[in-house]
Length: 333
Ligand code: SF4
Ligand code: SF4
Image 1: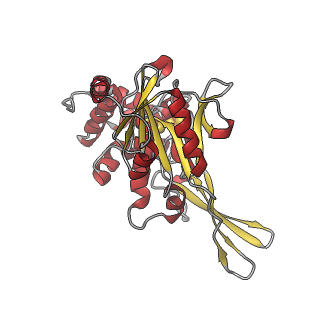
Image 2: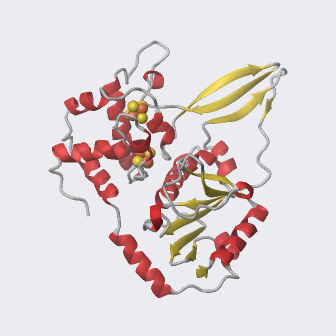
Image 3: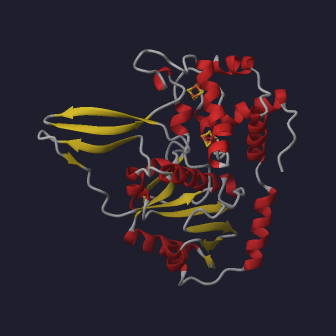
C-alpha cells in the first residue's frame, strides 16, 4: 500500500495513533539534540540529526523490574503498561537495531520481559529528506508498520503490516514513480558505513588483524561504557536484588563488556581479564560472532558509539582503522 500525506494528513495520522498508543515523537531539545518525547509534549521535529537515545531502550530499558518477592515468598510480576507504545521518527538504522533485538530476544528461550513491551508496539519509520538540513536518509528494509518517506513538503507512506494498512487506509494514494526515484536515491547513498563494517568483518574473519592492534586501541579506552550504553544492538545485562522493606525487588540492568567485571567469575578468574581482550571482544562480537550466529552483522552502523566514545574508538572508527592498515580484503558487493 502506497499513500501520500501532506502535513495536515500527518497530524491526523499521529492523532489517530495517539488515541490507541502511548505515542513518542521526535522533538528538538534546547541542547540541540533530537529525542523521542510523548506526543502531548512534543513540537514535532521532522528532520535533523539522528535520535540521541537508542530506540531499543523503550523495549529493553537500562533498569527494569523483573519481579517482586514478598515476605511470604510469593512472586509478583509488575503491572504492564495501560497502552502499547508507538514510536515515530525512526530511521533505517533505528529500525534495523530493533529488528536485531527482536530476533535476539525471541530466540528460544524467548524473553517474556522484552516481549511484554514489544508485542503490540507500533513502529513508524521516517526516511527520505529527513536528515540534517533535509539531507537524504536511506530507506528502511521494511521492518516497521509504516514508513514515511519525506519528499518535497509531503511524505510517501508505505504500510508493511495490517495495522499500518488500517491506519493509512483513508489517505490518498501515492505516486509509485516518485517512490521509484526515491528508492534509487536510497541505493545511491547506500552506505559507505556498511561497506566499511563488512570489510572490517572480513579482515577479522580472515585473522588479518594482529594482537598489537588491539593493545593500541584498548590503551585508549577509559572504561566509561558509553559505547555499550549507546548501542541499540547491545543486549547484555546483569540481575540485581534489592530489599525494599519487606519486599525484594529483582531487576535487570544493562551491563558493559568493556568493564573489568563483565565476565569475572566467582573464583576471581576472568576470561576477559585485560582491556585489550575486552576491546577486541566488543568489536569481534558484532563483526564476527553475530555474523556466525545470526548471518548478519551485529552492528547496524548507527554511529552512536562513535559519537559517545570520548577517545574515538567507536565501531566505525575502529573498522576504518582496521581497513586502512590491513585492508587487503576484497570489497564486499
Ligand atoms: S555503530 Fe556502534 S552503537 Fe551503532 S549499532 Fe554499531 S556498534 Fe552499536
Ligand atoms: S565509549 Fe570508548 S572509552 Fe568508553 S568504554 Fe567504550 S571504548 Fe572505552
